[in-house]
Image (tube, rainbow, N blue to C red):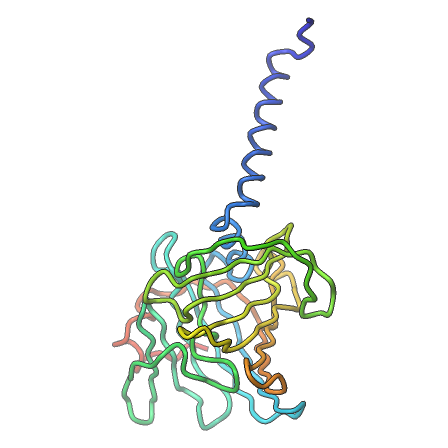
Length: 262
């Protein structure tokens, strides 16, 4: 039988086959899928973003709050650290949230004190403290791909998705478990359900309004629906993304009284 491929041709076929196999493995490896989803939600470089939370009850706006977030990893491949400064409403201006490892701190310039708080504690409406800090799920949860299925996303469109079950893998995890739906082709996050230790559904989140931000199409709005009352909704909007050179000392508890970055 004639060998129809030259040596360079055979090498190209081997490389192509290897690339195909690697892509196929990444598509079915749950940790790789989750890491890809994280990379879409969160820029790899240190960044600043404005976070606006708006609470609705039965379709009526009842509360709003705005923070400026600065986030970065403190070590290569590590979890994000975040420091967020309240700007609105005026009564909260200057207050600061700090997330570093398993520690979450709230600093009030009025009392000049920093107190440790829970990630599950509600910040506004259905948005908890753990929902506004930048987090890579792949660092804190053990993932399993449970199914491929069609769902309705936050834009009310049918999407082919992978459903992942995430189980807390360490004490840094904000929730006992999460069901996460990601786009079957791109791993873009579409929807998530967050559960308590008891198995009770706490909230459902829809990731939507994708825009080109810092090198990738990222969700700029998350709609959070209460697990018991579907008319209790909080919308978290992300605007004014920018890459920043963020000093490590900003993420130290002792630095909180001096933190004034906008």
